[in-house]
Amino acid sequence: MSGTVDTSDDGVERAIRAEWQPIETAPHTLGPHLLWGRGWDRPDLCVQLTRGRWHHVTGQAVVLPPTHWMPLPAPPQEAARDGGS
Image 1 (cartoon, one colour):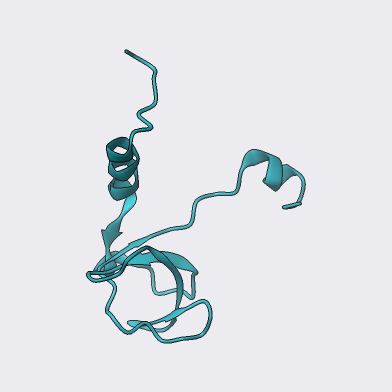
Image 2 (image 1 turned 90 degrees about the horizontal axis):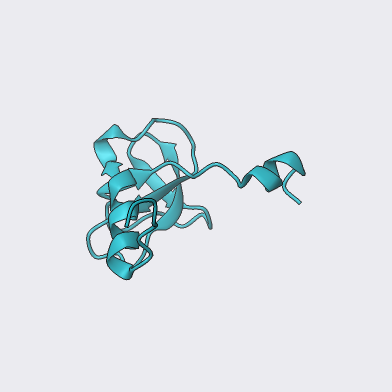
């Protein structure tokens, strides 16, 4: 069926994985960025304080090294117009 969105668990997972990039390609900016690594149970929001040293936004150092990153998505159109409220 053309024009439908695959909302099955497999479809959502495929869409998410399509955006992940190798950690070596992460920009050397503070961030935040979504990170993922082997042994992680979920993606996490992290910042890069110094080149190659990642910290969770809570301030804790990332223990298991990240393998992939993803930029944060843009806010919804309504939030951008309303100033985020």
